[in-house]
Image (cartoon, rainbow, N blue to C red; front, side, top):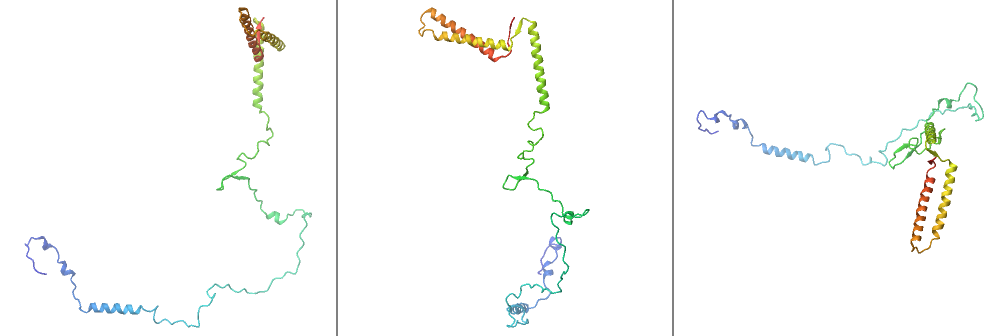
Amino acid sequence: MAETFYPQESIYNLLPDLLDAEKPKHSTRFRPAAIRLDDKVSKIAMKTMGPAKVETPSPEKYLKKHSREPKLPQKKEGPRRTCTARKPAVPLRSEQPPAGRKSPKAATAPVRPRPSAASVDTNRGHKELLEHSGLVPKYVKKKGYGEVPQYLQHRGEELQRSAEEYDKYLTERTEEGPMRRLSDEERRANLESLKKTLAELQDKYRRLPVVVDTLTRKSRKLQLEAEMKQLESDVELFQRFKTIYIAK
């Protein structure tokens, strides 16, 4: 490295000489040729299919059809079991088993639960039990279905009793005062009498002349109309109300 002239207190004097540390100690001039020779040898060795010293297969040992399929082991034939004694006949359905014994099938067979009825209402398989869906008429089969409940019967009896007591109280109060209550027979009789009178007035009204030009005819027509209007209101009153009070 060439000498450089810096003052003694320069900062460059504190840095190490990196170029001298990285410089190789020895190098040969034949190295590039050796590398090229090694690359050539390795490429020539790889030109064949696999290692060169592997023995090639014989042409007689070619691959046959179904040669690589797995084969099942051969069955070993052994002595066959034979039964000379005959089993007892199957009992008939009408026959009863001996006392204190049960058939082995009935003793070992488990009781399978019966599947509950359900309805599928969507194409994705949503299932709902019929018991809680409202499609099964289970309330119709109850013992007291269709009958009026007891609490409603008691309530109706109480209302009827209170209405009777109120009518009795009104009857007593009206008998003591200046008013009295019409009975059903009197109410029907008065209603028939009002209807009969109304029919007579309507007959008289129809017989009036068409041309009403005098003062007498006008007053007669107005009088009949007023009487018919009053009778119609009285008939409607008697038909609408069953309880009617009149002055004594």
